[in-house]
Length: 133
Length: 133
DNA sequence: GGCCGCTAACTAATTTATTAGTTAGCCGTC
DNA sequence: GACGGCTAACTAATAAATTAGTTAGCGGCC
Image (tube, rainbow over all chains, first blue to last red):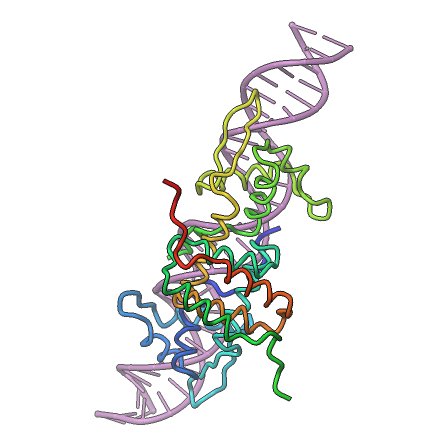
């Protein structure tokens, strides 16, 4: 059995999604010009990747004259959360506590960051936030 | 440019690493029998993957009679931390706070989990842990 | 001593991921 | 009305990932 299509964003896909999240609805030419000069891509390369993103359901398009305008189907936050859940499942037995302990135990963390984490969790509600009704 | 070899563990690779972390030094036959009956793999499939893991530097082997015994080169914690850093870089602009806010904002989190996270961070030192000297 | 079974090594097949070239259609310009 | 430039669609090339078959060597068993 060959590898099945990833449900997460690959590097090339994420690069495009970041531009879309930043710029909003964009034509392919916009995406090309939105790429950093240090790592440009050919128009056709971007087109190929964005069509894969559409097949995966991460973006949709509408026609505008001759060109297609692409929009993200999920927000950046949602994509990040989806990746966090993936990580939780793969490496932390779905334990958010174990994930947090890993973050806290990282030698590269600074005291200021630890303080910010403490503040963030202090302000967290004790119940998960309900969807507005 | 084709995709460059991932620095992270793929699904097939992670499955084997988990067995190695659990069992410690193992022969290929041990890995095969350590796989769940619901998703077995052929001996040669495991062998192929474990050799890729060795090429990537995740495992090393020593000879024991005719067989090779494979051991993990990194601990499960280290591998998890490495993935967390990857996630931070890819989706959270290297902000641990933004990652934590994402975890806390997950609808699927339970009040008990939030409490455990609060406890965990309350017990965290204000300075990153120094290596023992 | 020759055969059986286990091992690692090599080969193979399929799919995804990444990058980009070629093609064909449309629209405006000269 | 033909040409140039833009577009999407199609094709292509390469490497990685996943799974597994084939080969060759070595040791033990009858």
